[in-house]
Length: 239
Image (cartoon, rainbow, N blue to C red; front, top):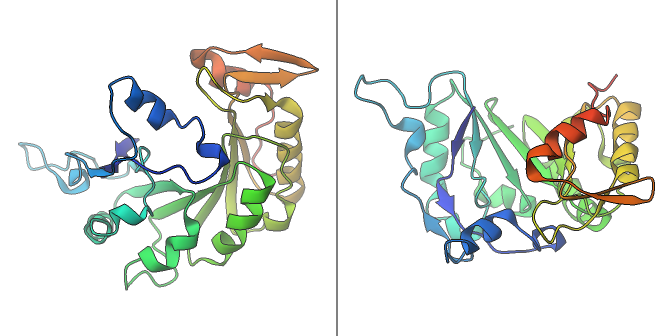
């Protein structure tokens, strides 16, 4: 597993962005997250060490642009070169998450075709409204590998209209940070059930900092949020 952030910074566009972890981390260093900048690791996928070997070895999953959005408009001048690097490293798997799937068609390279086999794209939806706004475009987009991310999960969501064989997985998580909004166990349980009914693998990634179950809200430290989610036993492979 490797991380690659070719640019940094973003703009809040929906309710899920309210307590963005990037904004929160940048604020600790007096940095303005709304300023989008190209990073020093922009060329990481094609960089080599002194032995002439790629710094990211063959076979790795590369988590891409997790401190921004790969489809952000401000990154339009840099994205073609990023695509060139992704194209050149077909021995890697690249994954990015976006709230801007509506821009997908205008952001892909001319040789994209039906999608590149080594690129996995996740569309994030935090509410029923955003599911309805984003998922129709996501399903119709030419992408080989598609997943849905419900994080931060802010309310109960019915994903059944969009759970089909094109969706490889659904991942869910609560909101992190001191001002986290509550994530309810019933919402997560419902999504797990929906995915099982449709044969889609499901992963409860983390509880978030404020997690409600059986009428009680638990404040969960960051280091325990993933392990507590696993203890819920809601993950499955779609069967």
